[in-house]
Image (tube, rainbow, N blue to C red; front, side, top):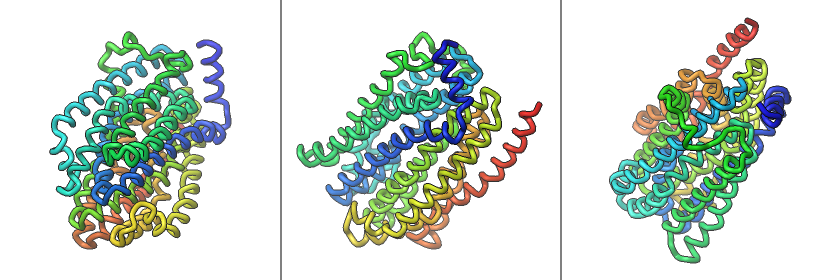
Length: 451
């Protein structure tokens, strides 16, 4: 390792864990917030067009989740391995994982984009679009599919940078794209009178520009790993390792897409207003969770790097610090959001039906969202250190195994209230199950570290 790599190693293994988590987490938090803010801004500007356009954002959000699921699978799968390899001082092998994951993500994004465009209308119907929303969903979805390769590759580059401990580089790329999206939205939608097509174009353009910016540190040699086609692995075991390690991310995002689609399908029975209201609440809850999730993503490279360096006490301290901080932040934010729920929903749409449904759903979310860091950090912990089975179990519970049955059962007995309560209650159940899994692992890990 050269001097710069040695300095990075010392930084990742000797800096107090609470400080390191915050230093790496704050740029990621900024990135997450900008990303969620521009998603929310997208919903805000589109909601000014019509109720059907507002509902279309909820439909297409599920499509974006699919693309992100694939990107995060390759990104987290490679990033976890890269960080542990750097902790073990195996730099050249880390570059193999970086290059392989980037080109795999590029290919996957192109396949999804082309296939989706060929079957656009059936895809939108599958994601829960009603007849009245279908036209807007197809227009918005077309641009998201065009942006597919940029979204998948961008997810990989972002995660490699974070897992290397270069969160500031990732922040620049994501925030630039997010800010650009927010600026383009009103210009294209209203000034050029493009309507929902303007929102889609703004997202596509910003995604490609963001991805190019994320690539620059690799091209300029500012990273430890190098991305080049000649660095791609010739060993299928490396590909298998990437995909299995990233499988929890695919499950998390993929099941989240299925859950979002199921929410749309169930809400459709109550009309477009219900779909629009649940879409608004989904974006708002993602924005709230972004504050805690950014810190949690700062924890990932800390846990992976130190686990690779066999500094297990630092892994344990970082995990509990991240969980407690995340729950504390969300507790405060959810309290304020609960009190101001009607005003928040009214920012998007002022129809009484949307206001009534959205306020109720947002308040249910605020009652339980603060428990989400338990399962989120648990899943990130096990994925970062290569414990694939436990990571997959917790990720699946958090995003689908609990909420999907609730979405199928609760509306039968409680109607619309069942739809409003399913997701937040699933977060609570998943967190409750995750705690003993984490406690047992750390008890065993402490024993292992003494061998």
